Length: 249
Image (cartoon, rainbow, N blue to C red):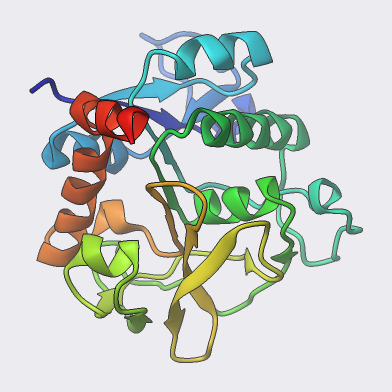
């Protein structure tokens, strides 16, 4: 059995002004940023990570998706509300509309191909927007001060859901680093996890075999057995053998 090749999106950019210049390094320039915990989580789960640069053309996205076995939609900044038909709130954080549009296009193409997807934080939000849903633009008080490996609140997970199967549990302790969240749900998406205050913490696509979104940063909690199991379950869904079984069904 071959290890699945997993594409990880990058949705956070750094301006030259925010990059520290080093005498031995290149001149400051616009950079893409991705936490190392994402490829580490994919590798620990049994996959081979590959990072997708932003602003890819539709043609290059299709070429890429034809060669990978699954997608991790990583976290990042706010999504511009023009993509779901709303005006920006005064509290909206920094956005990259061009990058947002490229990532939404990638999500739709991946869904068309039936690729398994694990959508993390902003990734859950991008999945929802790609399917016609909307977001809560400003959600204050949901960013913890503790490091990401420390869980700060509980979630309840619907029994029998893909997420519950992936975690091996119907409750979990998770971290919290988001400023936006799903509001109205997109086409063929259903909520499967909630925080104590009722906020949606997990989504699934009901018309695909394995498309799951979590509001928390699971990649930062791999010391917890249930979060590590989630990545392992996702990798199982991404194996070439699993793809062949879906094609034959």
